[in-house]
Length: 373
Image (cartoon, rainbow, N blue to C red; front, side, top):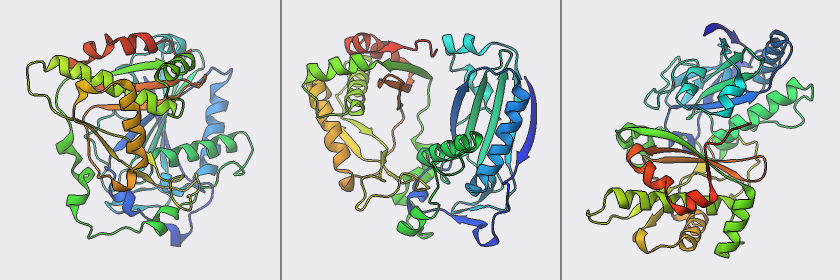
């Protein structure tokens, strides 16, 4: 791929008193890693004009979201002296529809400014956010974003993207205005906080070694409605139901792979947004990692039905104030789909995938990596 790079700076200078951004106590508990994200846009007649417009609206947006134009200062702060956000443009010699019709998750790594590696930690002087536009021959664009997790959470990046989109459409900041100090004022950082209470700081020791694969499962809205009716779980959310289903199928796949060994309890964690759960609630535009990670334990996985697990998940989320923070090796991310269904993007140990996908619950209610378009 042909790649060019420039740094996009805020359209107006960041005031001197805002040039050091201190993270909150909740941010301290988050691993300092780069989080990857890819967005896809349909083709246009003139990508050069569109790219220039994106750069200009990004510059305007960075005037408000100034930490994203800065660099890591140390483990507790960012230097927001308008160093500029690295902005890459790459030419991809293929059609975007060919990729979307048969998504290849191994190829996605090529969309990022540098190959994504969970073991790569941002160091002092490294950019807080990097963006790359991958321009296909058809005019379509895959926009990849990498951001330092200890400086911003996914909710904050979503607010940033909404604001950027509003600026690109000429709508200004009416749709999104970040509250950059909300987490800092409510959860001030503690430099002397004991590391033993912050396992994410040493997250490397929790990483599983082996052959892991990325799998995508799509649960259509109709399938979820039917499943909830079968379970008499109308009070449970779609997320509760899909989480319990994936957990059950994974536990059964592990049990099959480890047949003959002593049964061990299973532990699941789920990141919960604290903004709406606080009293009084925080604004959805509050910046930072305002999340908690409750644990849910299943001591006898073979004896638990799907309905039991749905309520275990629901109860675990409601009891976040009594939870401890833990880390797991196998990860599933749930995303809303257009039809009110749910997509589950899973990173599983390869040896469990076959057993997981032959489970009747997966076969009956999910589609494995269907076309995105």
